[in-house]
Amino acid sequence: MTKKWHYLFFVFVMTGLLVACSSSDSASETDGDSSNKVELRMLWWGSQDRHDRTLEVIDLYMEENPHVTISAEFTGWDGYWEKMATQAAGGNLPDIVQMDYKYLAEYAGKGLLADLNPYVESDALDLSDVEDTYIDGGIIDDKLYAVNIGANAHAIVVDNAMFEEAGIDPLEPGYTWEELKEKAKELSDNLGDNVYGVHPGAGVMGFKHYLRQHDQWLYSEDGTELGYDDDQLLVDYLQITVDMLKSGAAAPPDVFMTAGTNVEQFPIVNEETAIVMDIHSNQITAIESGAGRPLDLMLQPSLEGGELGHYIKPGQFFSVAESSEQQEEAAKFISFFTNNIEANEILNAERGVPIAGAVREHLKENASDAGRKMFEYVELAQEHSREIDPPDPQGSTEIESLFANEVQDPIYYGEVTPEEAAENFRKKASEILAKD
Image (cartoon, rainbow, N blue to C red; front, top):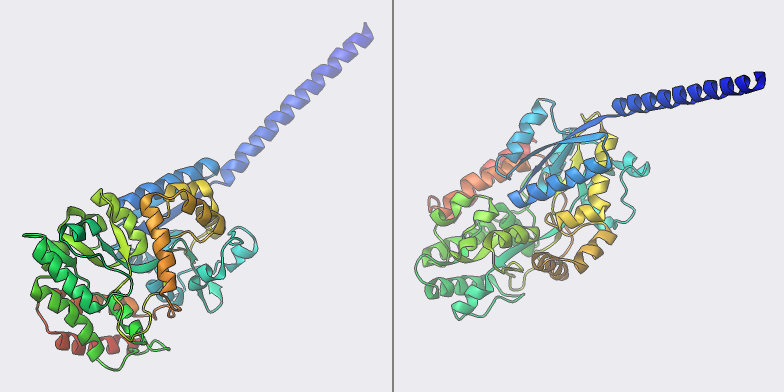
C-alpha cells in the first residue's frame, strides 16, 4: 500500500512538472513571437495590375512568415518621386522602396539607401542563382544599393491587326526613322477619322536612345555637364515628332496627353493609334490587358549607319532605406520576391524578365501570351544591344523634369521650335549639372 501511494505521488508530481514545463515553454514561445514581431513598410509605383499582383505576393509572404506585417503604399508613376522625396526629407522612407535606374545614383549619393552586400554575405538575401549581368546595375562604388526585380528593354508597341486592316506591311527589325514616319502617315490615312498611326514620343528616354545611336550619351563621364556638344542632335530628334504631328501621322496631344503615364489609358487601348513609342518591354502585359486584344512589341527605329541604341535595362529595383530598423528582414522579403516560384507565378514577370535563373526558366515555360512576347522581345533586343551607360548623375531627376516640361510638352503643342527647345535645354541643364 505504501509503495502504491509513493508511485501515485511520483506520477502526480511528474505530470505536474511536465504540464508546468509545457505551459512555461508555450508562454516563452508566445513571448518570443511577440518580441520578434516585424513591421515593414513597402512603397512601389505601377498600374492596377501590378498593385493587385504585388499585394497578393505580400499576403503570401505574411502567411509563410506570420511574425511579419507589411504595410503597402503604392501609386502610379506620376507623383511617385515627389512622394518619395517628401518621405526622404522627413526621414520617413519606407523600409523597402521600388527604385528606378535613373534615380539610383541620386538616392545612393545622398546616403538614403542601405548597402545590401552584408545581407548577401549572410544569405538573408540569396542571389546565388543570379548572373552578374543582372546584379551589376544595382552596384555603385562596390556597394549593392538595389536589387533588380525585372530586366527590360526599350520598345514600341504595335497593333499588327490595324496594320493589316490598313493594308500596310508590319514593321520589321532594322526599319528606319524615315520608314516609321511614312508608315505612320499611311496608317492615319487608311484607318479613318480620329484614328492615327502613332502615339508619338519626344521624351528624354527616346532622346537617350537617339544619342546612343550617334555614339553619344546625355551626360559626361563625371556627370557635371551634358555629354553631347552638338545641339543639332536634339533638334533632329525633336523634328521627327514635329514632322509626324504636322503630317497627321501622329495623334494630336489632346488624344494622348490625358493618359499621362497610365499605360492602361493609352489611345492604342481603344484603337485610336496603331503604334505607341517609348515604352518598356514589361509594360506589354498591362497594355495588352487593358486593350483586351493581342498587341506586339517591336524594336525602336534604327539609324542608317548608326550605332546600336538598345541595351538591357534593370526594369526596376528594390532598395532598402538606410534609415530602416529592419534592414535584414527587408532583405529577406526581397530574396523571397526574387527566388520564390509561387510568388513569381503571381507576379508573372509584370516588372520584367526575372533575374533568378530557375524562376526565369519556369516562367518562360509557362508564360501567358503577353509574357512570352516579353521574354522573346528581350532576347531580340539583346541581339540589337550594346553595353548600358552608367547610372545617371545627381541632378538627373531635375534634368528629366526640365526635359518633360520645357522640351517634350511644348513640342507636342507647337509652342517652341526644336531649335529653341534645344538651346533652352542646354542652358538650363548645364546650370543644374554644374551646381551638383
